[in-house]
Image (tube, rainbow, N blue to C red; front, side):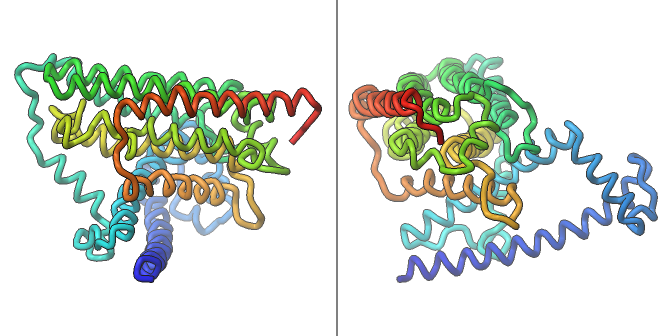
Length: 381
């Protein structure tokens, strides 16, 4: 089939590109050791002594600064978001029998995310006269801040986590609960009809689907007997929780689409009705901060959380490292969150809210009751 052939060819090109990037990365890192000698305690001959080089590298990687800025912090999430943007555009193009990004970078449009960023940076930052200037500018910054803060609690592996917490599940949802407020702040400060309608829709939708989303996470919590994300992963060494709580996994997946305001739940920013909704008055990098950064960081957060709760996190066959399995599983979940955009139409507002309270809320309660009964009956995963 043309779709499968095109998709396989694209995946092969991506694998080749990743190998090339890794080789170039090694070259850059080697050069960096010699260039940053005046800043860090590195001698030009350190690379000739593998023990010293490895000792320094491991010491640097164990610092909080490295975790926050490089991995699994800002740099890693930014690269993941850039890859997700390109992957979404190419995948949807294959589904719809289009070509997708092609010219930026010559190689399958690989530099399209960079071209988009440069385009947004080159645009004038226009702030309409009628807006509340302070909150209008603050809203996109807060949106990115909230999305980035949630990353700190998610463990890529037992070692690679920025902020360890015994109540990691609650911390993530406490952070995500600020998204409706930032959307409403952006809508209200725009002082315009369409953004306000979009903001009210976003508030209703995010609140309605936040409840079943939280409830769907409680089944894995009950099976693991802990709110600690690392302990939840370790409890899945024998069986993944997606097999024990498939209804909760499905509910989490659907509610994640609503939380991300993705089709078929993109009513707050429906272009034919609301002209991009609560983002209608934003342009330049103000728009880019929300749609190009915050949205895709939130996509990573929910994908990684699904991987942690239901797919065993970083657990996988040896000898491949646990980081590989976590990133692979997370990317697969991201792909499944992207696909509905190219397949389904938009829901009506009344059906959107009805499905939440009369459907997914009840499903989450039922699966939570099943999990509680199983644990009380002596079942241990």
